[in-house]
Structure formats: structure tokens, C-alpha cells
Image (cartoon, rainbow, N blue to C red; front, top):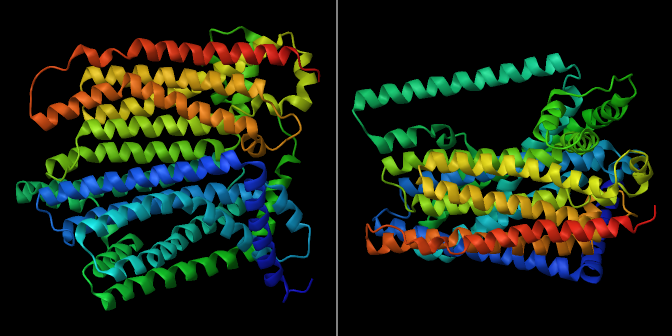
Amino acid sequence: MSTATQPAAFRRLRVRLARNGLRVALEAGRVRFAGVVLSTLVVSGFTFGFSLYLFGQLAAKEIPFKGAIVGFLFDLLFFTLGSMLIFSTGIILYASLYTSPEARYLLSTPARADHVFATRFQGAVAFSSWAFVALGVPIFLAYGVSAGVPWWFYALLPVFLLGYVLLPGSVSALGCVLLVRYLPRNKKQFLIGVGLVVLVLLGVWGYRSYRAVRYTLITQGGELDDLIGQFELVRGRFAPSHWMTSGVLAAARGEVADALAPLALVWSNGLMLYLVACAAAKRLYRPGYDRLAGGGRNKKVYRDSVLDRVMGLLVFYLDRPTRVLVVKDFRTFRRDPTQWALLIVFGALMLIGAGNFRSYMTADLAVMDKYAISLMNLGGTAVLLCAGLSRFVFPLVSLEGRKFWILGLTPVSRDTILWGKFAFAATGSVLIAEALVLTSDVLLAVPPALLGLHAAALAVIALGLSGLNVGLGAVLPNFRETDPSKVVVGFGGTVNMVAGLGFLLAVIGLMVVPFHGAQFARTVRGADAAVSPWVYAGVPAALALGAAAVVLPLRAGARALRGVEF
């Protein structure tokens, strides 16, 4: 295959892969495909309805839909979505370029490195931008309905969104290629580099805080100006998020000519960064891949790390053989950045949003109360927990299949192995989920009763989801697959995901929703009466449901695992 014909061959490859993937989804996984489509429609519909409510609150406060305050909110929205795209695209692209069998095969052919990179990049951007489309389009449709925009606003909106996806995707791809090629292997050098970056960020934050405090002292207040000043970085003339806001608001005002200039900025810079990333991949992708693949040839000393010892201490209540198995599963988890990086991104964004809520309240911009935000944080954390456990914990038993003879030599029973995996999943999920939700609730200053209720509900959800994933993973294993992503998308993974979503919705509906409903009713009536104790009536039922979600699947899984011959 000549160099001139490679682009056409890769285009045909992308079309064929997309067609085959759709056919397989429709023929072999119709339930899961329908579930994904239905979930997307539900999330988009909820986002549209909630956005309509928020824009209605802005109208009630007589805030202009096409003025500076809405522009400031759009700046934050685009900056947040762009940050999420940078991290999510980088994680997906790393797995697609450096760890997938397809990339290894393509690099063994005469294909140019930049063509391989372009193929994997387009797939990663399309996959990571799915959530961006599902969340961004309903928000701006609700804005258009509320603000009464002309028809060309809707025509320009998809062009803006598609162009904006290129910017964070290209930045993420360039950073991924550079990090893999030049990241120091020496831990000391790596920690020094990370420390310098942290010091620079702290210095920038301290300087901006000093300027904000000084401005507040001079102006003797001005809370709204202070709030907007804290986000001056995302509102600068060189910020892509501000280009998007300027173009969208100009289209909403009917100023087509003023909307086309920001649109040209978005597309031209996105395409330029894409070409820069391709040029970097042409020189650095193969050396980086070889460097990463050859990193395991040096002599290694296998010893427990600090994180492994911490994990062992967290499961102190188990006997030593079971603790060793738990640490083994944890080591597999921490060595795969695609598993834990999204948890860090989601947690950081949620805590930043909760921390800024007080600033919105001070500036009289809060169009929703803290109870609604805390419920959204709880629901988002529960859904993230369900997806994370389904992705990592459910395939654990299936992946042990071909190597189960090694575990058979250990002095532990199969039941103990299963309960050890449950202890690993439950310990990690409880700690991570409780830390996220409780920290955000403290920042939101919710009452202690609601704080305790959220903690109890999240503990029930974490334990129940852990039991479901481990138990159903043993009842419905797939010992033929070595790729965990293929185990997850099979019949067993679909059943597990549906059961997990139904379980968390039931627990939240029984334990938490009545309290929030009572608070919403008090807000509407303007009453100061105490919350009725009947809001806690569903707690016993939720606790019983959580106990059943732990005990029943694990018993069934242990019985199924004892009957399997390896």
C-alpha cells in the first residue's frame, strides 16, 4: 500500500468499522443498544427540562437572556465542558493508541504513524464528545426556547459545537503524545516535575486571590464584580470558551455577521491544533509506543508500594491470604489510568461547582437552592459509581478464568476469593463516594440531618452495587474473553448495569427523595415548619433492599463458582 493511497484506505476502514459495529449492536446486543439510546434520551430530556426551569428562574429575577450575566454563565459552561473533554479524550486516546491490540496491529503494517494516529483520534473524539452533545444541545435548545432566538441560531448551534470539540480534543491528543514520549521514567524526576507544576499553579492562584482581596477592600464590596473577576481567565479574548459565548450570543441576538467571526476562530484554531497534533504524532508516536512497550524489559524489583500497604490496612478485618488477594486486585486497578482518572476528573468538577455555590449566593445569582444541587451531586456520584463498578469489578471473576489454576494453589476457598473481591469493591467505593458527596455537602452547608441521610444512602448504594457486581459477575461469567470491555458489553454486563441502575434509583427514591421533596414544598409555601418524620419512612425498606443486594447475589455467585470446572 503506497503512501498516497493510505488516507483512502483508512477512510474505508473507519466506515466499515462503524457499519460493522452498528450491525453487531443491532444483532447481538439489541437490549444494550436500546438501553444506551433510551438512557441518552432520558438524560437529554432531563437536562432540557431542568435548563428550562433555570432559565425561567433567570427570567423571574429579570436577568437579560442576552446580556453579560448569561454570557458569564456560558463562559463557565463551555470552559467546564472543554475541561472534561480534554481529560476524557486523553484517557480514551491513551488506551486507543498505546494499549489496544488494534494499534499494535496497525503499527506492524507499513501505515504511517500520523495516519494511525488520525484514525484513533477521530474515534476517541467521537466517543468522548457523546456526553458533550447529550448535555450541551438540550441546554442551548432550552435557552433558545426561553430567549426567543431567531431560526439561524439553531442552524449555527451544531456548527459551533462540532468546531469546539476539535479544540480540547487536539490539545488532549498533543499532550498525550508528548507525555508518553518524554515523561521521565525515574519516579524522583517525575515527582519533581509534578511538584514544580503544583507550585506554579499555587502561585497563580495565590496571586489572583491577593488581587481579588485587594479589589474587595478598595471597592468595599461589589460581590458580583468579585465573582466575575475570579473567572477572568475563561473570559479573556484568547479563551476559546469566550469565543463560543460571543458567537452563540451574537446568533441569539440575530447578528449573523458578528457570530461568524467567533465561529471562524473556533474552527481555524481547532483545525490548526489538529494538524499540530498530527505532525507531533508523525515524529513521536512510534518512539513513544516503543518506549512504553519496552519499559518492562528492564529488571524490576517487585515490592509493595505505599498505596498497596494502605489498601492492606483498609481491609485489616480480613485474614492475611484474603488481604493479599484484595491488594492484587487493587494493584491491577491502580496500574490502569483509564479506570481511576475519570473518577478524579468528576470529583474535581463536582467539588469546584459546590465550592462556587457560595459565591453565587453572595452575588444573588443562585437560581436553584442547595438542596437541588446536593441531590444532583448524590445522583451523579451514584451513577458514576454504578458505571465504574460495572466497568472494573464485574469482569474480575471472568478475567480470572484462564488463570484460576494459580488461585487454586492458594490456601483459600472459592467463597473466600469471592468475598475478598467484594471487600475490595466495597471498601474503595464507600471511601471514594462518601468523600465526594460529604465534602460537597459541607461546602454547600446542608443541615446535619441531610448530611447523615446522604452518607447512609451512599453507603447502602456502594455496598449493594459491590454485591451485585461481584455476585452477578460470578453467576454470568465470560471466561473466553480477555478484554474487560468486551465482558462488560455482553449479556451479563447488560443485566448487571440494568440491575444496578434500578437498585440505586430505588434506594435514592426511598431514602433521599422524600426529604428533598419536603424541602421543596417548604420553599414553595414559604413555611418555616419542621420537616415531618415521615420523610424517613422509606429508610428501613432501603436498608432491607441494600442487604438483599449484598447477600443474595454473593450467595448465588459463590454457588455458581463452586460448580465451575477450570
